[in-house]
Length: 249
Image 1 (cartoon, helix red, strand yellow):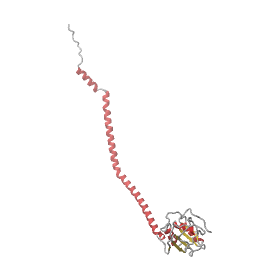
Image 2 (cartoon, helix red, strand yellow; image 1 turned 90 degrees about the horizontal axis):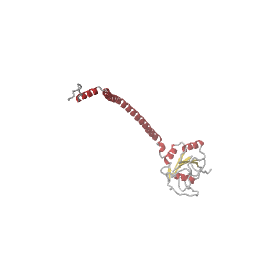
Image 3 (cartoon, one colour; image 1 turned 180 degrees about the vertical axis):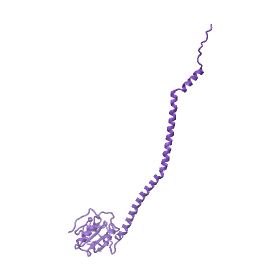
Image 4 (cartoon, helix red, strand yellow; image 1 turned 90 degrees about the vertical axis):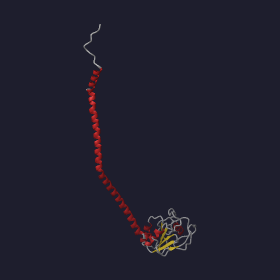
């Protein structure tokens, strides 16, 4: 026999779907997600605005920085220019002031001896002091000597480009000290006593000789500056150190 229908009816699929949608619309989790997205979007916008603002500020400051950089550059270049101009002016002034001392002096007697001939014997030189010719295999160390030295050793020093300054025994102590100061520590200037000469002081280089009255004469400086390792040197670059240091006095 047929069963009577119940007064309750099953919800339809449409109703269930409606309930689910309604449930989702009121889900607290879904409600909290929307403000977070807005906050992130707002934060990115603020960062972009701050970046643009910083760029505008940097552009405003750029001209001032460039001006400072140009000023620093001008100051540095100006200082360099002052140093270079000062150094150039010093060289020019020094060249002009010492030009006379670097000239070949007048009244230099010249000769024509060839170099390279050695002997252990005593040599009878025509000139006094000698200006070149056969000489001892050992050279005289360039220094200041208070006594005579062997001609043969001194001539070998001349061959190496040395200037030999000789003075008479009766030269005053003041003049001798002046010669000592002129020689200083120059490794190519040789000074010694020499009795057999007419002038108080004689300056000799290979094949060149000048008689001088006083150590104060500018001709002495000219002679040293011109002939020290000068064009007359028979053995350019040869040392004047390490030779004999003995004297005859």
